[in-house]
Length: 408
Image (cartoon, rainbow, N blue to C red; front, top):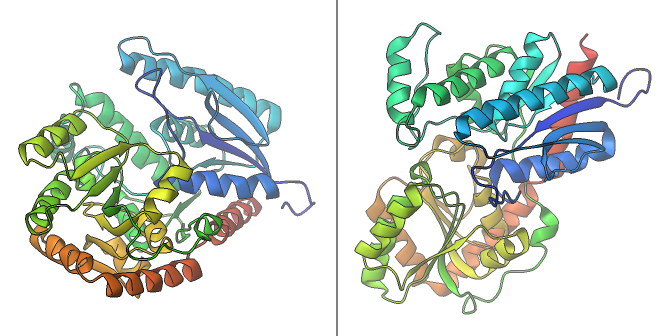
């Protein structure tokens, strides 16, 4: 709250971009889930004014929803939409005079708006999840004249964009707004390290991560009940290790022919089609099943109907799905990433491995040791429920926003 008890007015930037008119964006995973839970908390403790997409996925105390169109080329529509968002942004600032602008890091348009706000001299805060180029590669330009780094970035961006210049510009705007923002939040030391490499020198607040404890009140089923031997949750893109996932599961099927893997996540093209081709080439049609993007209730059910959580993602700022899988009573086999070493440092059944063969051997060991697997899953559950909550994350973010606002 303000010193004179006036409610803190926060302008929240969470406009989401869709590639197709029918494209759904369920707020169930990763950064979207984090933002949903934090926003619910902020709605109770501050005056939230949302600049968001139409129809709105996120609900604020006051909501300004701007409609996106789908005229071709889409990149031109991207900028048209950005101009409409900027016009509405100016209207909100004039009408409500927010104390601080908050970019939760859920879309490119919001980074542009945060940068625009700093150019106008407004107070801005941003949440940073992690940074990677298409395919999971990371390049850190030293400055705006670092042409070799920009050429390297364009090479990786070409994997998903025919004209990489425009997407490169999006990344430059992201970097600049993260450097200029009055305060930046991030979940882990890994995020902090990336921010420093991007060039952030101003304050950074570590928030940790959270899960919705109410969703995991149910005890895990007995060890013989689960339908899926393995579960992966994440968007279908190379940086999430989706091709490695097939290699790992092929090795498991060679030992356990009936082993079934559930894969949950958004289809990212052209990677999903390539993934499906590889699945067929590896003769895994009877063992690996893509369930698509599940709603929250069905996702929780899928956690509870699985035996082992398999997560070979190649880059993560936090890996919130790991904490959720733990809370559902699953042992975790994941790639050995820096973010996990501090965030989950003493988890009882988190196995961090580098090699695909090691992955498959550990999963086979867990699947063939039913009693031990169930026992270790329960230990993971107790650990996660004791350690992670959205309430704690939300309190840190609101506290940081209030502190930044008072530093006039």
